[in-house]
Image (cartoon, rainbow, N blue to C red):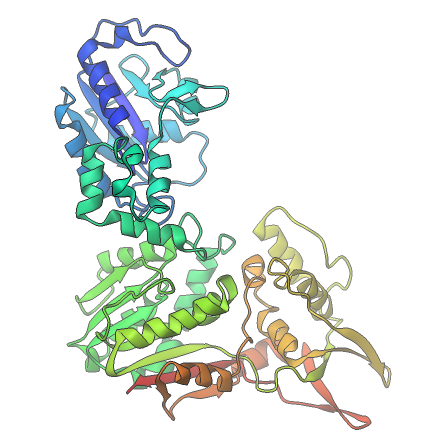
Length: 530
C-alpha cells in the first residue's frame, strides 16, 4: 500500500512530518478518510510517493523554488518517516480538469512502471481542493491539515501560508510562531541557499504575474515568431557597438540576439548572459541551449527581473544590450521602475562599458496638434466596439475593420486599465474628414494599429512617452555619456506596409492644411559609462 502526496511542496511543515510519521508507524486503519470513514485496511504503508507539481516552474511568486531544491528538502524530510520515499516531478500543463489522472500517468512513466498507482493500492494525502479530482477517480483521501471541507478550513498553517509569511517578514527567523511550523529540512534549506531573499524579492515585484510573466494576454507563439523574424535586423543594427568581454542581453526573449552574436568572430572569447523574466521564453532559451543552437558554449540564462535590482555583478559588464524592453517597463511598471532600471544598468557596467538600447521612441514636440486622415474603404466601419471571449475571435474581428474603425476601437482600448483617455475631435475641411489629436497619440495609434494578434497586450503599452532628447537627458542625469553613433529613425518597412494608403498626417499652417512626414519610430541609444 502506497501513499501519494501531491503538491508544489515549496515548503514542508512539522505537522506534515508528524502526520506522515504517525500514518506509517501506527497503520492506516487508525485513521479516517476525508468523509470520516475508517481506512479499512491492515496493509502497512510500504512507500510514500511525492508528486512535486509545477516542477518545470521556478523563480516566480507561485513557484519560487526550483524542482531540485524542493527535492533536496523532501529527501531530508523523509529520512525518518520509516518507509522509503520517492520523488517525481510533474510539469505544469495549465488548467487541466483531469490533472490527477495526468499526475498518476506521469508517476508511472517517470518510475518506469514501478508505481502504477490506483485506488486499490494507494491512499492520497491532500488537504486542498485538488483532492476532489482524486476522489472522483475513486481514491480514498487522508485529510492531513483539513478541518472542514465545506469551508476549506485547516487545523494548522498550510505550507503556502508559511511561504507568504516569509515573503512579508524580513525577520521571519525570529518569529517563533512561524519557525515552529516549518520543518527543519525546509528551514535549513531556506537559510543555506538564502531562499527567503529570493521569495521576498519576487513578492515585492509588482510588474510580474504570479507565474512569472509581464503580461498574461500575450500569444507567445506569434510573439516568438516575430522575435526570430527580426533578430538579424536587430543584431545588425547593434553589432557595431558591442564591446567584447562579458556581454549581457536583458529581456533576451528566446535568445535570438545572443545566438547571432555567438557566430560573430569578434566575440569568440566573450561570455554571454541572457536575462529573461517571462517563463515561457526562458524555457525556450534553455531548450535552444540544449539543442546546441549557440556556437559559443559560454552562454548562460537566468530568469530574473532587472527592475527590482542588479542582474549582473556591479562594475562587471562590458556590454549590456536591450531591445524592445524599456517601453514595457514604463507600460507595465511605472516611471520610477524605468529610472531604477537605468540606474541598475549604470551600476553593472565597468568603466568604458556600453549599454545599447534599441527600442521604440516618441517624436520631438510630441504634444503639438496634428491631423490624421484615415482610410475608411479598407474594411468595415461599423460595430468597432464588440467584445469577444477569445484572443483569436478578437483578432479576426479586428482584421476586418477599416483603419478608421480600428482607430475608434483603439480610442476605447488604449491604456484604459491605466486610466488613460485619448482625446481627439473630428474636423471637416474641403470635404475631407480629419482626426485632430496630439502627435504623441497619433504615433501611439500608428505604431500599434496592426498588432491584432496581441491586441489586448499591446493596449497596455505606451511607445511614445519620451522623445530621444528626453531619453538622452535621463541617461546623462545618471552619469552616462551618449555616444554620437546613437540615432533615431523612421522604420521604412512600417511606412510602406502599414501607413501608406492607411494613415496620412497633416498640420495646420495658417489657413492651410499641409501634409507632414511620418515621424520617427525607433532609436538606437548607445550610452557609455566613463
